[in-house]
Length: 168
Image (cartoon, rainbow, N blue to C red; front, top):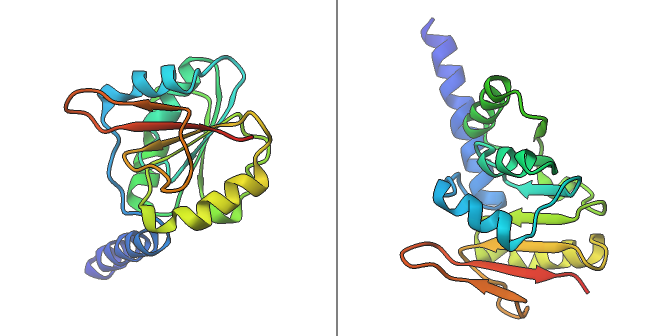
């Protein structure tokens, strides 16, 4: 029994550290910011929405309620399992994949959302610019791209800032 618990704990820790190395550790988005995101990104029915590092899937479920085709990628096992349990309970049509988003082609996206650390932004910017079609909306939560001018900066009192970019 202890071996089983040890293996589970080890898997959780390993995937946590992998996610930290690749992008960011899991820090949930504030529920109060979901509506701000949906309005900022102008989510509408049949939009293809990707959440890079989707954590517990909170944003995906909100986008799906607007009729979006929401898909998220997570490499840390604990938030992934939480998202899958929420998916079963909520019965919302979202896709949650245990996958590194760096290995996914995002070319069919209408909206891409992320809450990642700025040190990966140069690589992320190259990925987004090479894969996304013109007009795709990109929303960064908390940190902006240093050398990319946002179309809209959404500031709210005592809330994290959101940055909307549009692929040209």
